[in-house]
Length: 618
Image (cartoon, rainbow, N blue to C red):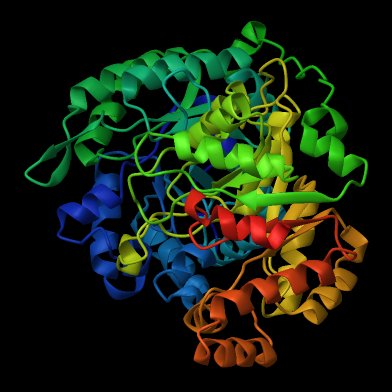
């Protein structure tokens, strides 16, 4: 479809400041659309409503109308069962915007993040992300957009894939915008001096910021961006201040006049494209447009080149070799057989019994203790605190189990740095499970990153870099472990994930409980190309019920029929406990020649189970 604008978008930016429209979501919400609806789908079910909002922004003087397609990528639409309508939603979104614009206005294809983590923090590959953006972009081109507007990206890596995907299907102009903190640093911790050159290198026509900040802090942030920029045009689209909760509704209280006053400051800084994000309305856009008309033309976008601060490459920092990371790391690097035991944090704060149990285990030859996280929300001591206490007070090597559920990337980074400062040197990185297994699915804790992403994060810390790629000085020296399930089904998927974990930096692995030695042998053969030291988890069966539970209710664990039968016969004689110990010792003997260690777990892993641990290890 032929564009309706009278001159090319980039040339128009050279000659004047352009004003973009404001929020679509805010306007839909004001019309009674619930926030749990898929706003993008309204292009199909309520086109008149969407069109009416575009019309309001055109009447307010907007030079650019964004399509109602911010979340219309396949990943986000799948959450609403609409993935198969992706192309239709985007084409119709472009058509509705095109029908509203005047001869001098432009239609911008709005594209937001995928709503999932991509590598290195998530399981979605860069190629998959790039393909998803290309797919959406192709549909927007078919609908007749004049340019693409990427908005509210927090991940620089994802923004790079978005631009790369669009370049595969179109040569239309691109406006690439990040969401940043008040100091201009990205939400992953990357400074403008580092992310601006990277975005410029993508060849985008406009680089800018949107959402997250109100006008005043965005002005300070865009000034840092301008100082770091070379020869790219700038954009700024702030929120209408911070939202306030009024009777259960988020209300943005920033007045149109206030937004307009900062619009003048934006284009005095060199901004060529100004608009609004959350909370902005046609009234805000009208005030911004009047401010642009009444102000003198700002300096060309290249005027900030002289202020550019050249980004310095992060200095190379030597990582700590495995043999020097911890006693466990040294043992692994020498091929020593490892004996590990699970020891859970106590209820309350008193660690006397746990420390005594740790000393006794050390006396019988246990090399290290895994400290599990409590997924049930019981009032137990922090696993990080116990790991540090075991190292300091009991002289025992600790492996801290650390999982992703209910945590965000920044908090995880802070936890890991704190654990290292406290003396913790070994991490078992796990995806984990919801904190409240009794809760309804929609109320369970969110999963922002999985074990592969967590392993990548720890490796980055070991290289002396934070989430944003910034150097923080002396690197950490974590010995990185991961979980693996030899009995998982389908086996191919588990093997592939294990390979991803090894590529991410895993240096050893602890299995799920193993009862079937033949399955373990097949698994070890299959992973041989990416072999890393394996510790086999052995969990003694104490009752027939525990055996049936493991077989039927624990994912990734399989018991041979003969073991179930042995426990059934023993249970009838009141000897299930003794038979469980016998099976555990047989398994230990069978797997020891195949792997580099064993890891003994008992129900709950509490000190009172110590005699059973000693009996198995005797």
